[in-house]
Image (cartoon, rainbow, N blue to C red):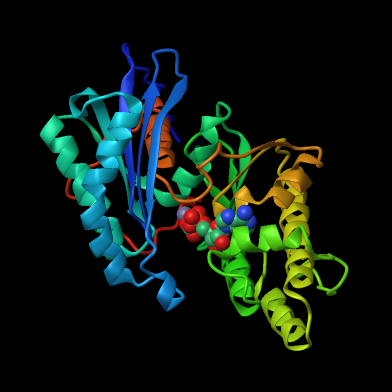
Length: 341
Ligand code: KG4
Ligand code: ZN
């Protein structure tokens, strides 16, 4: 496969990134410098609260709220960066995967903006965005391994060359974040469940509820979280305290994520591992990864959960790698695998 030559701009290029794949309206701005370095200039996210009363994201409400908020979020991002819209030299927006109606809002907005400014447009993959969120902390150059662990995804990719993704493992059922959310809900700890479990776990006993770590001792690099969810439900019915349930579940989930990822990194000969997505904000998970022999890179503050800056960072990587701009007639896709092998 021929790899396009790296294309570095002769002057700094400000890239505006948009993510409206689910229930967060995110706009971020980064700057790609002539030496290839990337600076984060702004990251603004409007998190929709309208869904809380339904216990899950209502797609139509998400789309409408993106429409109502996106102008304001972009204005805030430009102010944070100290820029005006004409300073933007490229636009990137998520085209998938995600809720199609929600994706379309940011995608059409991004295309319209690029066209009005007469600058290149880059359609971005949501998971590539999550991975490149870590580029805010360290220069991200292949080869590396990437664990994307969020409310909708638990995917392990090997990245042998820049822009090439090989799926080496994934969840067979629920995403890790989904398990955090559902267990928090059943034990009355609130929504979103990740931060609630993480906080409650500091007050609980991780030995109180025995959880069997799923798929350990197997040769694959897949994950499973639905068994932990069922075990949590049974423990809850059996009278386990929410704090103990949180501490015990969190330890099992963290162990599974860290052990499987470490095994995959060793099997693929990778030392650098990116851990990103909403669950990567978890303190216990970060500590456990830092205790391994791997060079683990996490996204910077505010870049774990969905945001626009990660899409701008993915756009910067695409420009730097010499990828051509995307056509303006491409659509949004609900299901879009990242792996190209
Ligand atoms: O990346 P994200 O915003 O959305 C998806 O693309 O899915 O991730 C949201 C998920 C939720 O399930 C949330 O509970 C989880 O990330 N999360 C956490 C923490 N903060 C957010 N999970 C564990 N510990 C946290 N501190
Ligand atoms: Zn996400």
